[in-house]
Length: 55
Image 1 (tube, helix red, strand yellow):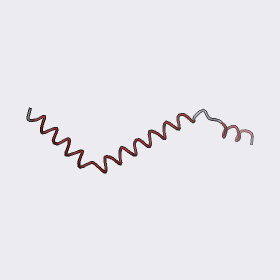
Image 2 (cartoon, rainbow, N blue to C red; image 1 turned 180 degrees about the vertical axis):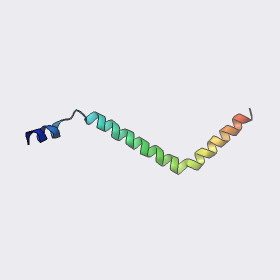
Image 3 (cartoon, rainbow, N blue to C red; image 1 turned 120 degrees about the horizontal axis):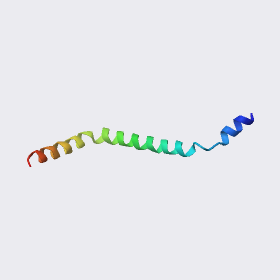
Image 4 (spheres, rainbow, N blue to C red; image 1 turned 90 degrees about the horizontal axis):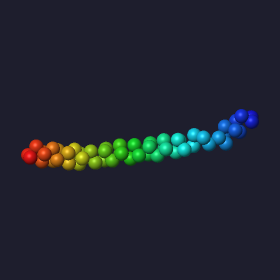
């Protein structure tokens, strides 16, 4: 029982878990943006490619 209590109060990995959660949220947002604006992003890259090809 004593060991269980010390594991609950241990906060050594708290910072790393917070960073992992933040990275996970950023990845989910990035994927959502690509899904929502994928066709517009593709059109933008196509126009940039064609403009660079004309140079």
